[in-house]
Length: 68
Image 1 (spheres, helix red, strand yellow):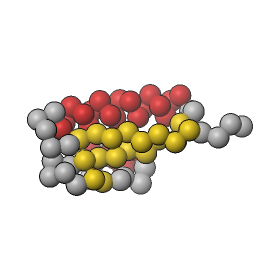
Image 2 (cartoon, helix red, strand yellow):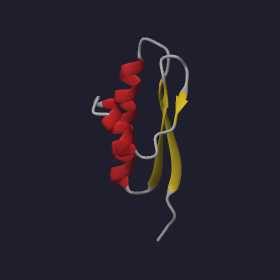
Image 3 (cartoon, helix red, strand yellow):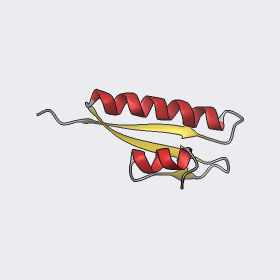
Image 4 (cartoon, helix red, strand yellow):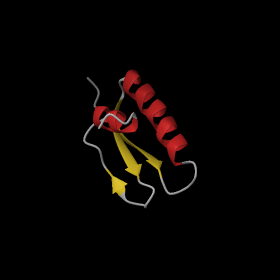
């Protein structure tokens, strides 16, 4: 079995497009996971420019949907 390529998806930021980049980043992450060739690491930049590194996609997605 071939080793998966590690990919970081950086999203968020302090601009007016913060929410849009989170949504689009989530869509990209979902597609990469479905492709099963990548180890995906979400990276979220908050509105106050702090970088967050969720442990896994599921924890990121729950935060994105306001469940956490």
